[in-house]
Length: 295
Image (cartoon, rainbow, N blue to C red; front, side, top):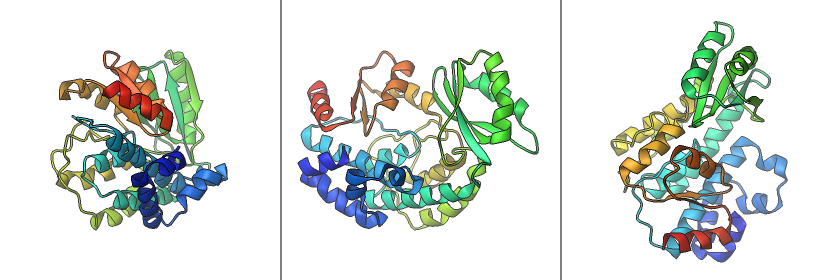
């Protein structure tokens, strides 16, 4: 998708050149040729995803005038939401997420931590069982509250295994291990936050042009000065995406747009704010459809 957009829009191609310089990666070649195993490495996947998401935003802005009342992202996507709002320079964002991905890959030894998706239960019940399954030797936490009935847990594998049966007995339809390289968005990521803090020290943040909803507290950033701490909190705290989506109507959102590869967030939004039309642009053709829908 990113390569196709770069071929079609000069502004997107120029952005890819800037992103490659900022990340030190041949992003267009990796997206075009792979191999997929390389693209799945967190330190490569994060800047690649962010670059495509910003590219979609640039293409949309060229095709249509959109009155944005708020933006938000899921984990990595929060950086794209900040870039779109003018709060963070895109080159700085790509550099940061390359470092973020590298730190995440190194944070927890392989085989120690993991993540599982819990389907069919809401966050309070999952949190209760996570507390009961945690002890001094192994702990598990909620890492993503995605939408009603979909929660992700993260932590030590031993604790995740302990909590699986109680969650199933409580009514979970499925507790499925995720293929991830580390237990993201939980206190085990504190070494990542500590290392990322040094990279964030030299980054300038501006007042966003519209409210940007932070992952860690599901509330708009009060000021530019709060963004640095919010991005650090995001590393170790759960992504409160369900609450963030539920806030959008009160901010005046009439239609919701998902910009980037895939339609996962569209599915989460349909379950959380079903009374708002939701459109996704996960390829150049759908971008054209999206523009017609919001015209």
